[in-house]
Amino acid sequence: MQEIKQALISVYDKIGLEEFARGLSELGIKIISTGGTAKFLREKGIPVEEINEVTKFPEILGGRVKTLHPTIHAGILARRDNAADMETLTEHQISTIDLVVVNLYPFRETVAKPGVTLEEALENIDIGGQALLRAAAKNFRAVGVVVNPDRYEKVLSELRATGGLNEGTREELALEAFAHASAYDLAIHAYLEDVHQHKSEGASPFPPIFQPTYRKSNDLIYGENPHQRGALYDEIGVEKVPGVAFARQLHGKEVSFNNLADLDAGWELLREFEEPTVAIIKHQNPCGVACGKSLLEAFRKAYACDPTSAYGGVITVNRLLDETTAKEIVPVFFEAIIAPGYLDGTLETLKGKKNLRILEFPAGGEGDRDTTWQLLQISGGMLVQEKDAILIRREEMKVVTRKKPSDEELEDLIFALKVAKHVKSNAISLAKGKQTVGIGAGQMSRIDSLDLAVRKAGEKAVGSVLASDGFFPFPDSIHRAAEAGVTAVIQPGGSIRDGEVIKAADEHGIAMVLTGIRHFRH
Image (cartoon, rainbow, N blue to C red; front, side):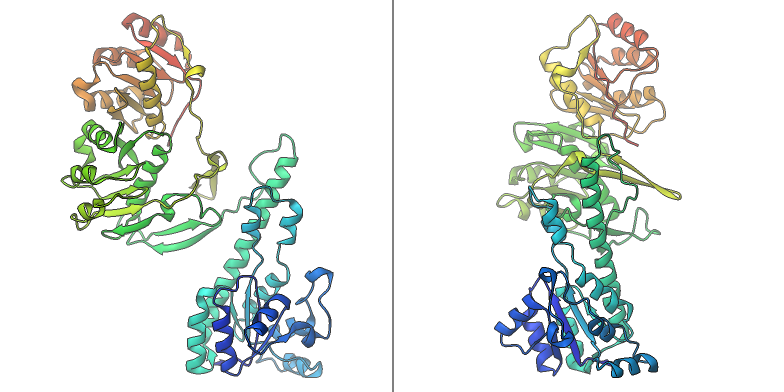
């Protein structure tokens, strides 16, 4: 057990500091500190010695250099079991520093502010703090390092019980310090890379080194299957962007890997719509989506699309969920539900289903969708792309058939295309009255997806419109759509047989709109 005799405290975030420092002082641990922290402790009546009194050297360069001194770093880095190291400390009259308590300048918070300048960002890059963290973490066999205020209580408890910190605790604290230091450096790199990209005309938006940072939120019961382990990680730096990773669970069984994947698929789909919308998701594919004047209407329409597939799925809604809609949801078996919030009486109704997982989106803005990356790990590397945030507008559509779609059909075509964007390729979406009536997903040929959508729709396909995420390679799909009663089609175009496909639509009196934009989702 390494005894703690002297602690260095230099923190920006002073949450919990008074109680922690007072506890150290009451244990007879000498505290040394830097300007702002020392002033705070002195005002609280806690004995403290300033760094410059220890180093006999003042803070210089406006505080840029204060802890970067041999007296400080030798006291941290000296190996207690190395006779030569300890002789060096004695020779230079340097005391060991046994506990380092440091958190860093708020770089990430600073660069997140609108209008922040490069000068402000640079001044919030912590140098001395990073050096202290790394030194203490490197020498964890002799030194404790605390970077997270949430650790104060545990550290104090162990010190009170034993007078020191055991090696297991010191190693755990060191790992946390290195993780924090690494994430901090990555945030700086990402910001400066972005600044550089904006200065470089025509530069690729993808940095030479791509280093996203994530922090473990919790372990999951298992991964995609029971024999696979799984965990949830939060993306550092996007805490204010509402998303499934930051959702709050209000009731039900522990949320699973597959639940989270399905809920996220629903959340991304809902972001396409402004009016009350419900999406029922199964295996990351929508099996029913609808808009309505109310959530109740939207739920009824979404569920009617494919009640069989909806069984065991998840529900996502984009409005505060009301009790009336909840009463219609409860009789059906759903794994989970997520909403921006719940009106009075709604939670009580839903909690009647003991195992139903009930989640709530965090409040906040949606963030910049256009600069959000999508990642796909492959053997030996990672594929990175921008999110598919584009959707065609009415004025950009190109009608290529003799028959023009009606205003109603145009609305439904846009609705169907929004859904098809979130269906795994090859994707076909049939819709009528802003309600999906049939969805074909994940087939290796487009006509197979169409056959699946038509079979799901049955008689409801008559009078529906069709959206395809990719072009039609042959006119056979148009013939099949006509047989089912489809009246209008939206697709990107671009096939060498576009002329044949358009001719088939004209033969059947089907309106066809080309977008020029493909929406594959693999």
